[in-house]
Length: 202
Image (cartoon, rainbow, N blue to C red):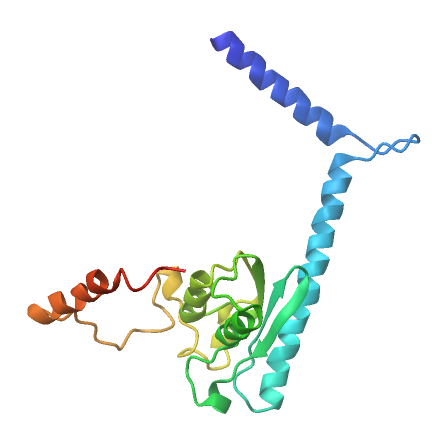
């Protein structure tokens, strides 16, 4: 058994060595390493293109006085289906962050509540609310530009929390959370049991 495993490991080693050692020759042999690097570069260029659009939205939102300098773009099959910026001031809505607004618009446009075949590009690292919205929409990929600290540095410490990082350093919770006790809690739980036949998930 040991010898068999040893042989398998050797085969994988030589296969890996051969693949990563292939170089371009006169007869047109293409280096696998070069092809992989080319693919990575293409993905990077694509990401940069859509991220730049998100950044443009961030500037646009401030110029329009709609909200803070945050933008987001949702892409489906290499096409932008939603390009939005922060609308908190314009809508008088603390939940109208760029990512949430983009998700809402994309869902309406695609007529679906799941965006599993979409990607989102955000000009800045999303806050916990936006991460939650991204998760709930089942978006398959997130690419963001600036770190949260860049926004925190200009005063958005109450806008972008680091709760997901588990540090609680930039934002301290001031919300009291209490679960109702007694019969009311039981009544609230019964809602799910009593409505399960009327409401089907998706």
